[in-house]
Image 1 (cartoon, rainbow, N blue to C red):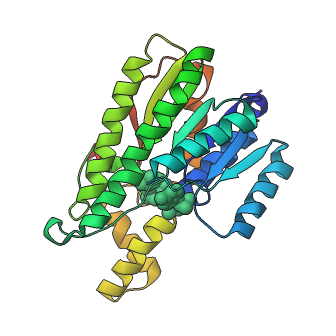
Image 2 (cartoon, rainbow, N blue to C red; image 1 turned 180 degrees about the vertical axis):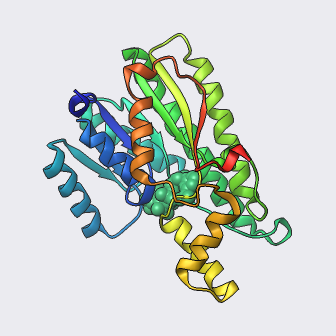
Image 3 (cartoon, protein in one colour; image 1 turned 60 degrees about the horizontal axis):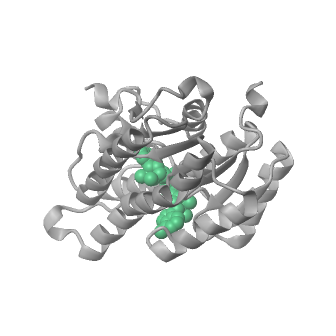
Length: 264
Ligand code: NAD
C-alpha cells in the first residue's frame, strides 16, 4: 500500500541533485511518484541519479536546470514539468544556500542570493503551481525551512530571515488554500550532514584546529541535544506523510525534526 501511495502523481523537488532534496525525491519515487529533479551538478552524475531512480522504482523522471535565483528560469521549469507530466501534484521547495558572516561584514550580493534562492523562489513556484492544483482540488506544497525558521543563530542573518519568511509564506499559502484539497506545510530540519553543512564542519575544523570528526561533534553538541544528525531519509518519510491523505488536515504547520534543538 505504502509502495503505491503516490502512484500517478508528479513531484517536483527544487535543489534535488544533492542532500535533503535528493533524499525526498528518492522517498517519493519509492511511493510511486514521477519525479522532476532540479539543481546544479555534473550532467553525467545527474543522469546517473535519474537512471538509478527509474530502475529502482519504475517511475518516470525528468530534470530541469533552472537557477532558483531567476524568476524567468523558474517559469520555464514549471512549464516544462506541466508539459512533461500534465501537472505538478507535489511541490517541494527545497533549494537553499547558506552564508555565514556577521551582519556588518555580510556581502550584499550574498544577502540577495540567500533571500532569492531560499525564499523568493518558493513564492514563484507556489504562485505558478497553485492554479492547476486548485483546479484539480488536490496538491501538496512542502517548504523545506529549517530550525532557523523558528529560532536564530548568530552570523546567519540572511538565512534566518529567509527561513522565517518561508514559514510565513507557508502559513499564508495554507490559509489561502484552507477550503481546498491543497495543503501547504513547512519542515524544519536541525543539522543534517549534507554538502551545505559539511562546509561548516570544514570551516570549524580549520578554525579550531581539530579533526573532521571532532568538528562534527562540536557542531552537534552546541545545538542538537540528541548528538546525532537528522538524515535525508527521515525527512523524506516526513514529507511522504505530509503528502498522504492522513495529513489532509495538517495545514500551515512548521514541523521541526531537529534532535531536540528547538525544545531548549
Ligand atoms: P545541499 O547543498 O546538499 O543541496 C542544495 C541543493 O540546492 C543542491 O541540489 C543544489 O544544486 C541546489 N541549489 C543551490 N543553489 C541553487 C540555485 N540557485 N538554483 C537551483 N538549485 C540550487 O544542501 P541541503 O543541506 O540538502 O539543503 C537543502 C535544503 O534544506 C536547504 O533549503 C537548506 O536550507 C535546508 N536545510 C538544511 C539543513 C542541513 O543541516 N543540511 C538544515 C535545515 C534546513
